[in-house]
Image (cartoon, rainbow, N blue to C red; front, top):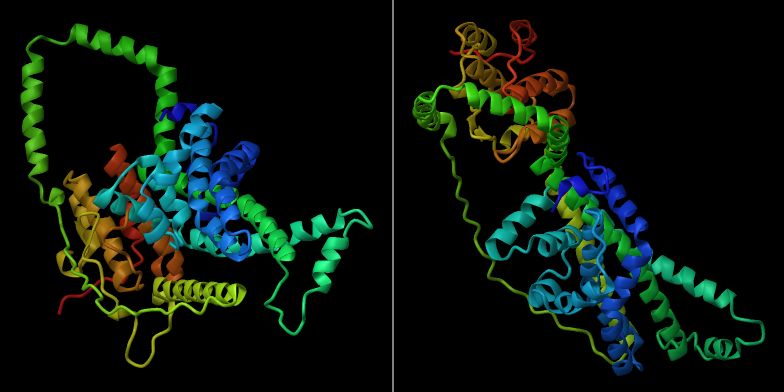
Length: 478
């Protein structure tokens, strides 16, 4: 992967901006992706059609079940073309057997109905992880943009049904006048008393239109998932920062090399051993600090042993049975989506009786830093300013930042998690509103990030301003 060859603008985006990026990538190479999609499913679709020609509904269900194999080829095309690679048709065709068989049981049985499929499929195909590593990476990348992914996954099938109806009406409009006798005869033979007994000709035409509509929507759904995947990796791995440094290195490469050679030429011969020894001692001292202590939390989740046995409806009427199954699947997906939304935004519900948001478990360690109130001084700004004037700059700014996190958890009831990063904490504070003082938190976060990662020390005026503008109510010891 060569980031300098990327053909799209790499920058941190919001969830729906990432979806727009995926749509743009799919539009740019639409016909190539569309052809690759159909090359993957053409043989299985033809074989299923020959076998289930008298049962078009089951033919359509098998086609829908087989869609992830085609999505893999679309991902292959989009990922290669993003980095300015143009795979040949020979390379694309060689990928088809792998798209059919790779992790078959997991992809087509266990995780077939997963609402996060557009993103997890990108993790599975582009990173090649398996087992526990794949699960951890999938959970990490699905955390951002999960709402957008679930909406796209939910809407895609409804959009496909609408497009299928539009294609059917378009085909009907283009039938020459006087040549639609067979179609009209099939419609006239449809008995209103038994609406489920649809003539086979009508069913077959509807199924073919639905297949074409599903292929059109799935190309863009796969593109949207790929866009969210790219955005998540940009947020987590700092691709935009890496690209900026590479461009800077490209401009200053010659001057930097010349300066390094001149420095080496003037460096005394004995300085190397002394510097190495001092560096090793400094490294040991830094690693021995309590800030580098690794905190682990082990949670045991009991396994559910109760399993319900579902009985499939009778197969006497194919249409009725398929409609029942589809209805229950959609109802279950909608219920799961509503429950997840309620759980995700549980902190927004008003307090009832004596219960309040204080009942929510509060984080005690965030990014390896203690944020519980008992680990902080009673007057945080005064303690931080004293540390700064003693020359302990990193400890002073770290105390201010830890204190700000602790106060927004305690006073504003912001649900900051122990796994959150600086960006996650800032986003949660901004979502909490004015009670969490988002303007001040944004300023202290920026100062902390510049010091912790770029080693850029703020001046004393800025520190005094941050201490003097401290907006949170201080805890008083009894």
